Image (cartoon, rainbow, N blue to C red; front, side):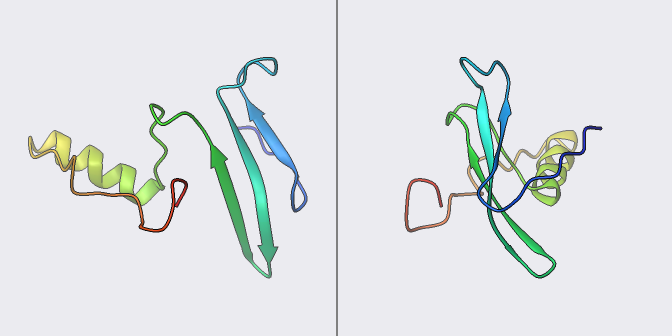
Amino acid sequence: MLVITRRDGEEVIIGDPSAPLGIVRIAAIKGDRVRLAFEFPREVPVHRREVAEQISAAEKDGNPIAGQIRPAAGGENA
């Protein structure tokens, strides 16, 4: 596991720096909460761990939940 210290507004580049797969940005830090911004192509799935576990469990049961999880209303990156 790689652990990196970053400050508000700083970024981590994922993949080749000249053609990155994606960018993770520290959007805000308030108390014990850190807000992250992910910039990846739409084809790259990005899930919170609890959602990823639900998807994985549903696929194992033969009951895929694709189509039940939708992006939040209010914008392309919401």
